[in-house]
Amino acid sequence: MKVHEYQAKEILGKYGVAVQPGEVAESVDAAVASAERMAAEGVALFVVKAQIHAGGRGKGGGVKLAKNVDEVKEKAEAILDMQLVTPQTGPEGQKVRKILVTAAEDIAHEYYIGVTLDRARGQNVIMASTEGGVEIEEVAEATPEKIVKVYVDPAVGLRSFQAVEVASRLGFEGAAFKQTIKFVRALYMAYEESDATIAEINPLVLTNDGRVVALDAKINLDDNAMYRQPDLAEMRDEHEEDPLEIEAGKHDLNYIKLDGNVGCMVNGAGLAMGTMDLIKLAGGEPANFLDVGGTANAQTVEAGFRIILSDPNVEAILVNIFGGIVRCDRVARGIVEAAKNVDITVPLIVRLQGTNAEEGMAILRESDVELESAIILQEAADKVTSALRK
Ligand code: ADP
Ligand code: MG
Picture 1 (cartoon, protein in one colour):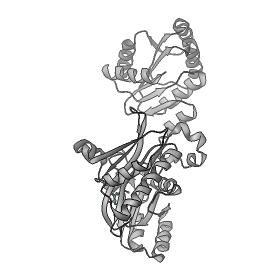
Picture 2 (picture 1 turned 90 degrees about the vertical axis):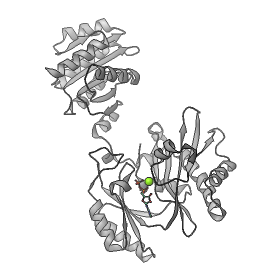
Picture 3 (picture 1 turned 45 degrees about the vertical axis):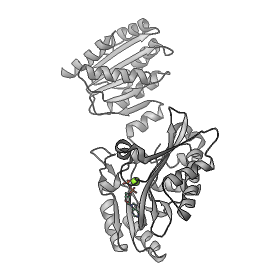
């Protein structure tokens, strides 16, 4: 689960991470009121920032400097409700519903620091670089030596010397060095305690008056841990998510929308990916990834059909079920039941293999569901792609 920058800063702030304060607004008036409050406290220069679940906002025109309250109004008008396109949003962009009004910092240098899990090592890794602000992926590719990596054993936790190592390898000195050590420790604690999969600060800045502070923050939370993080679960912003993916989540279906025209319903993530590959090899383009899981029944199959068919690009559907724990006859009954409630308006190709496949195919044959069956996966992929051309 993703959260907005202002929410990430709220989480980090609770753990003592030095984040730049700001106020979030959903209207121009509210933004102006925030700027006036901040001006009364002595802020002379502002930054207005679009809040969307994607980075690269600066590049897309979603981060603007404002020299006074009037300019905050102007920038807020420009950014609120805009369709912000950044390198991370895709060409259609993302609608801006919230903005963050914050003080502009006088930046001496921009750094990068992030914590995530290194799956291969089974350890957390703190990554840091003096080359912050710009896209860290480019730095990692072109000049990997400029990325400092410190691995943390989750059983032991972050050791003091490791925070010191990060701060010194970034070249900090004096008071800024001490602030950075504290920053690293707080950031790591926030990452662990909030069940984050990534906590990333880009940029972390050293200001000209010697403060070390996070100007931007990104936190992704582990969906599987949300049951024990009720406060964080409330930060979910469904506006930022694909409505079909939200609907799928309600039925425990693992659905990801793609750009093609062949809808797929498969059990198991690996088979789903293999099926997508074969569709592509046969000349089609998958419209989605959909793993109905090991407990496919009439309800989940019906929900699956509804979700696939609500994508207007879908011109044919391929159901590919390998019966291991899930029995093919049960899935077949699910398809028959689902077809009573959902109007399947496109060609349907079904392949059932494994446990009770024969029984399953017999159920489908005896039903009045209009479909083509296939035995070999290649045949299924060929049939679904040729159905597109009819
Ligand atoms: P994104 O990563 O989505 O582009 P950032 O918050 O990192 O958004 O902003 C992009 C750039 O804008 C930063 O690298 C920094 O140079 C500048 N910036 C952002 N916030 C501030 C601020 N409060 N004061 C000064 N500069 C800022
Ligand atoms: Mg950033």
